[in-house]
Length: 421
Image (cartoon, rainbow, N blue to C red):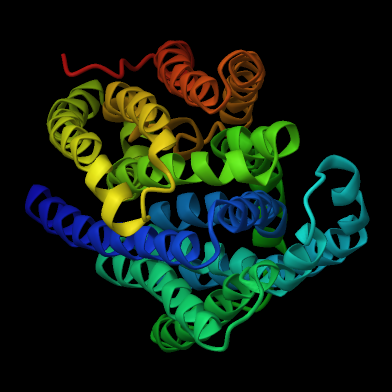
């Protein structure tokens, strides 16, 4: 198991490197071509896009991941996947209908020209993205981490390719969000083809998926608030800055949050590898196995993030000078605070799905709600007091509050310590 785990980690870390480079290149291309204001506009839409996808996928990605990882037969696995797909086709369609209907509200919340048009161009991609989340969760639950890593990398590579195409045809700044639709539609085509072949190899399932649909709706309904809150938690700083300070300051901050999120993908990658292991550990209440994971995986994550974070902060002035034409130097201090917060919290953030994987999605949702409330408070105080630096400090504090709360709840709910000892 450890050998396979090591291979999966290496493959997904390679995917991380590809994802980070493509994500940085995408934002550099937007920043160089259109400037801070356009970058701010794009990232505000992207924040709404990520947030909206949680309603589109309706928590089904969490249910699919858990139940597939615990499935003991190919027939059950096929039923789990088929029933989840049936539901997400409906929830994603309802979500984009609501998104279109709510578009006029954007002019009330944000005083940013072109925002409504930019959002409408991204909405078809929201439908695809919601479905893609469930398809990727299926691969994750199967433990097909190499295929999972491949398609995760494809997402940002496709975004970069779509952006290059839009720049080549000289679209206006408000139209660059079309890249979200182009990239997610292409990814859906690729993922759909792969899974059509993969699921076709599983044993034929008995007719009827009503039982699994009911279970997906139950589990997904409990888990969805945690996903909605988790995504809002990662985007609340961008949305608050956009509403309070406008697109220019949001564009400056976007560079810091972009680099910090790329850096934080270490947590995301390791978490995806660890997730399928957590359900069985919690079911057995295996403290020894959990402590071993925290010691080995958490320790390696800390070492990797300390080295990567130091290198990132040191390299930022050169990055701004040579790639961003010196336009985004004010992003240095926000980046520093975000990196420090992520590095301190990272070793335990990789286990953040333990409540969901342990069959307690409602508790996980309650945890994420409390973290979101504190994050909004910290960000509001920080933005009004220190602008974009205050937003970064508020977000960094929320990381630390989150992992401290997770440790306490894990001990009380499961009797397990998120500790290396």
